[in-house]
Length: 119
Image (cartoon, rainbow, N blue to C red; front, side):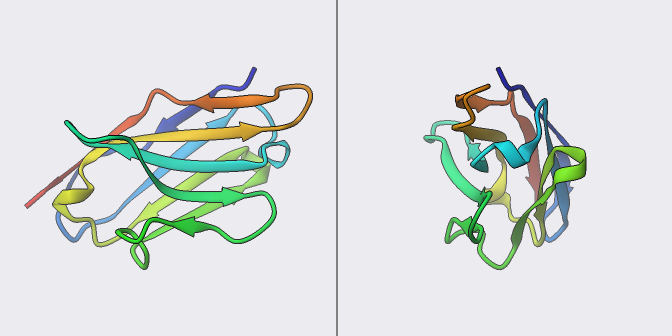
């Protein structure tokens, strides 16, 4: 089993920045993909950014150039740096871990952290 815990959400004005953190209970080097998703009221959960262990990060078109996903293996943590936040970025942000390691194969979700962007 793997647990992932998000933190860093909060209230920010439009144009501001926040950095979300997702700490995993295992080495993130053993997790093939770490990603961030978000869900706004009345909308489906959507992929925001993904970070494969091998390869380049991917971003939703709506956040390209504003959000950056990064990994810190020493801290088993994945970050989502969010700049120039807009009201439409308001959502609960979820961390996801996909593992193919035989010790903890599966897909794991955190409970989410709320980001609210005010005008």
